[in-house]
Image 1: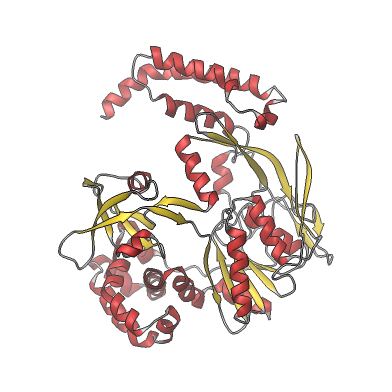
Image 2 (image 1 turned 120 degrees about the vertical axis):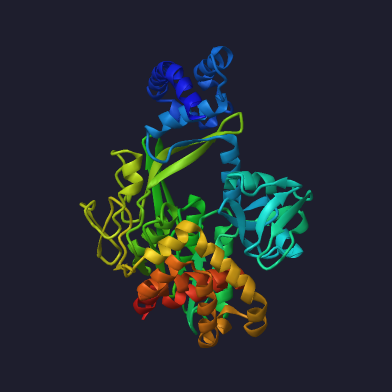
Length: 525
């Protein structure tokens, strides 16, 4: 296999260099045309005729077989990457997946899964979805779909999705292996429309503090947030912690609607501006559900784009505390531009600015690798020009939102945890223990909070069961690393709470030892 590939590349490389030179000429022609950026109103991709003709020549004349669609995708992506890190080409399948994610729903069986040891392992059956209704459980290993084996064949997540998704109303027979069950189990599942909820959890942390976790910004996010705030208000919430850690962003319109719930009418939320785009201002429009009570926004180095719009607006108007790490620093606005074959390009058309005038886009001149790896969340080296909040506090742009209160997690001994992750044992142990204790704990503890209150009674039993599943090397690390041991226990307990009581249970458990939550509660006092 390797020798065949090297022989092909020997003859293909000179031709590929020629192709790249031609692409460079086409790229120069395209980018030198000032009207190209404004091509959003065109209904076809006829301007790519030269490229299509070039690919047609390759397809019809090249000495070996060539996947033209893959070649086209790589070529388009290569020259868009020369513009900035976020302008990109989306092949039809990726464009469809993005549209589904942003729309807030898809059609399928309703499971979250991960690939563990070359097998799709169910993380969760989505509440109320088709899989939950027929009895699929967290920890089930999906090994068969409509009679086809999908385990142990180096299957990818995309392959699994392709097998499981389908039109609502169609049926699929799924074979699973369940820990503790001697035979393979089969479930006939009728696919349905599955909501992709973006509010992972919303509950009261204490008598007066509400907690909302938002994973991304889609078409349904603002509606979900408003519903969660309304419910928490009815539960006595007088202060809110909004968790945007790890939230990569999404729709600008969603971020604006969420800010509208937190800010008084007529307050500037964000504005955008580009060389071919006039300045556009976005303001809060009406009395929001939570515009007068204390609020705290949690962020980290992976909070980006729409997350930074929310954090920047709250910070610039002195509306609340920003707690955590410096955010990623994505201040570029992409506009999706569909192509006739079902693909699309997302082209950067503007930058966004916080109310004080900050553009928080991090530098990207050193290339994509440096852009994504050089993330220094606690440093201030990119800041130069001061900006001022409504009360006159100095804030900076030039590379993310620097929080009002910085949080740095304690470094733990990671040897044991990394060892368990590397072998896949951590997930395996977590699911095995879930299967072992699920029925007992559900009967004894209706909610994760009840489970937490009785920790002293079940924790020794859990640890004993955990030790039985470690191999000799892992047991040695367990004995030698008390701090690392505690971290492993926390991860397993959080995962088991998610498997049994859902995402709300996960956050109820993880928030107990979360240094961000502790810092936010202290700030709100």
